[in-house]
Image 1 (tube, rainbow, N blue to C red):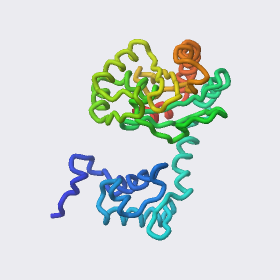
Image 2: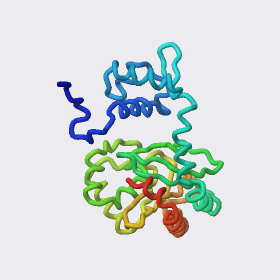
Image 3: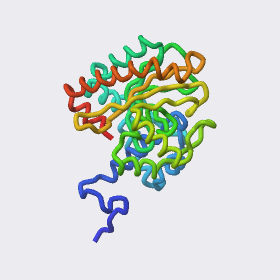
Image 4: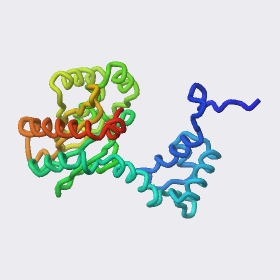
Length: 271
């Protein structure tokens, strides 16, 4: 009798662990790891070299990964995966117009993000012509605890979901203002839940100030968050909150209303 795959124990019998491993290999490549050797991929994915070798060979054959000498790297074909989501879920029609309105009214960058594990994932982003030390684009990830978007989302999770998020959060320090203690984060999230927004100043990097509000689905559960962010040389944190918060709440209401007409998008954004 064949021995059960330990990674599949307790999972749906139709769960394909081979597919999971292939995706783990694919998403291991990022801005900090644009090219890796087989052993580096294995270390980053916590998979055996033999498994990684088979995954890489398959992904190379499919055209998603390329190889030169001993290095592997992503190929342009991977863009079809992300672009299919953006096109099929009507992101440009539903989300971008309110974000562009925020950018045009304020001169700030405006973004929509969802939770992905202990990180936020940018689903839509409208930038200005100003340069930031920390760049954000569609697909960018940041730890939730250092961003206004992440904390606005975390504060409105159900208690069990919030506990699980905090249990798995590394609370990495980026600046002297980054919250790195669980008790301090719980206190901050309680404040955010009470007032309905979060504002971050120099928490992810110095010189960045932002304010974010949550978006809710038809059942009242949080599904995403939107924010305005800019440089501290342009505006103080208090002034940002005072002037941007009403605009953000209006944009959030506009997106929530639009999501009622696009239920598939709402479902896809849910944590």
